[in-house]
Image 1 (cartoon, protein in one colour):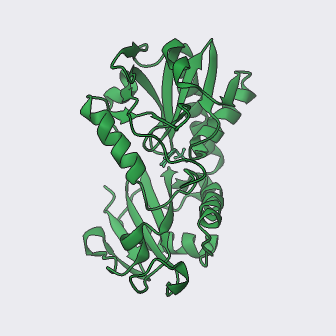
Image 2 (cartoon, protein in one colour):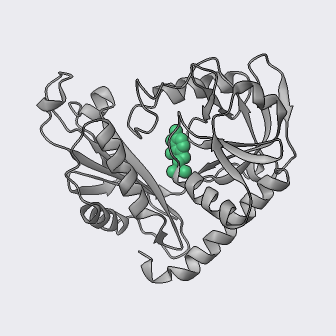
Length: 302
Ligand SMILES: Cc1ncc(COP(=O)(O)O)c(C=O)c1O
């Protein structure tokens, strides 16, 4: 069992004792960026890629990251040591950099310096039915923030857009939402990327969403296995022609979708447990993880 622990300003303790100061800009304004990575057999998965994405989020909000990748990984290792992890545990690591404390004033220049916060806990256990049957999605009325207002590639501490869309999807009985942008193009789910099979091809929206690392990994895997996977604009009207659907994220991996509620309340149903292309993607991803664990055993942190 992984004990949930946290790190703030060099202090490490059980999570319930970790407190963020009320003048922290992450708390006051969502003025922060973060990454989540997980371990497999104790090996951090895509640590460097996550750090690069953090730097991209930072540049999109004009934040200078003062914590280097080694400083963060040292803090993670130190925090992990307090979590009583054992071989075989799968660990979720969320590290967040806020623009730090300062006066109650929007001006980011008034920040007293960045603050690093780390949360370590067990990888969430998703409902097993979501893999054997699939999860359900709905298209909410609420639109995804536009790339020119709050770019979805800012992986930051402001998730209200996603929270409100998720709440709307849940109101109609779905597990998660598929958000459209203001031009009715498909973007992503509340915390995962979405994929469809349309006209026999695997497709995923190319913009208006966070560039998921799982998505990138899966595109490379599919391509290496001669399966066509296209990142392209997907119009809402195309969804009624979709024959399969799945989502990807670091913690969900590849998760099938069994139903999608459209804006008019009509429902598209997909094969239970995923259609053939979804199952192939799930199987390729699992095989990649077997190889990853075999090839990187010397990188295990515990
Ligand atoms: C909004 C959003 N989109 C997509 C993703 C999937 O990204 P990744 O595959 O890197 O976990 C996430 C994951 O946190 C997310 O929050």
